Length: 366
Image 1 (cartoon, helix red, strand yellow):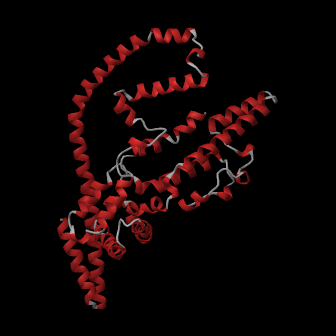
Image 2: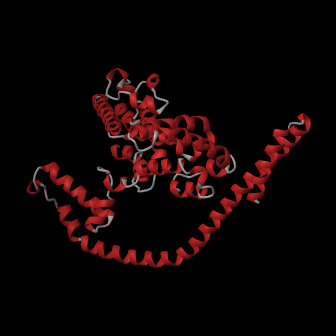
Image 3: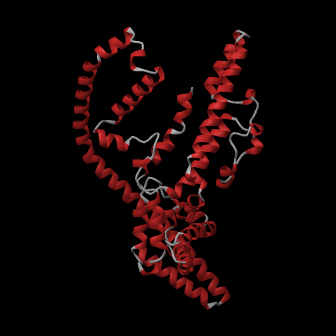
C-alpha cells in the first residue's frame, strides 16, 4: 500500500532527476502533486484546500485542526475495499482497520510535511520563475509580466542585475511576447517540458540578438539555477553514485536495500539467514549469466531498430513543425482579413500599418 502511494510521486522525482533547466515548471508541478495527494487521500478537510503556490507554502500540514476524521480518510480503491470486506467478516477487525487508517494518515502527513520542508517552492524566486514557461507566456502574458518582476527584485538585491537595467529587461520581455510568442503561438502553446528550455528559447533569441540582449542573460541565470540537481540532490538521485561506483542503477538500488535491511537489524550478524535466502544466493550466478545473454540480444535488436527510429522521429518532428507553421499562417491570414475589413470600414491608417506588419511576418513564415 505504501509503495503504491510512493509510485504517485515517482514520475515527479524521475522528471526532476535531470540536469536540464526545469525550474520554470517546478512551481506548477509541485502544486499539482500536493493537490493530488491531498484530494485523493482525503486527509485534510476540503475547505482548507489550496489553489495557488503561495497558499501551498502557507499551509500547515501538521495542524491537527485541519485534518479530516480517520473514517473519511481514503487509502485508495483497492485498500479501502479490502478493509471493508475484513470488517464485514469479523467485527474484531474494526479496531485494526482504524489503526491502519490512522497510521496511513500520519504517513501522508509526514510525507507532505517533509516534501514541503525541503522544497524550493518556499522561495519567491522559484515560484515566479514560471514566467519563463512557454505555455504560460502564451496563455497568461499579463501574469507572466507580473511574475517577472519578483526575480528581477531578487537579482537586483544580489547585485547580479543593475536596477537601471530592470525597466529595459521588462520592456524586452513584453516585446518578446508581442513579436515572437504572438507570431508563433502554436509552438509555445504545445510546448513539451521534456524539451530543453535553453535550446527552445535560443532558436528565437538568435533571430534578433540586439532586441533581447538584456532579457536573454536573465533567462540564462534562471535556467542555470536548476542545472545539476541530479548530481547533488540527496534521497532519491542515483546518477552521481552510478558514475562514481561504475555500477548499473539496479545494482546500486539493490545494494541500498541490503544496507537498509542491515541497519534495521542493528548489525550484520543479527540478520536471520533463512533457507529461501540460501537458495536465492545459490541461483544468483545462473540468473546473472541469463541476464547478460538477454542484454546482448537486446543490444543487437536495438541496433537494428535504432536506424528506423531515427528516421521516424525526424519525420514526426518535421510533421509537428509543419502543423505549427500551418496553424500560425492560418491565424495570421484571418487576422490580416479582419484588419483589412476594419480598415475599410473605419478608414484608419494605423490599422493599415498593422496589416502590413502582419503580412510581412506571414511572408517570412511562408
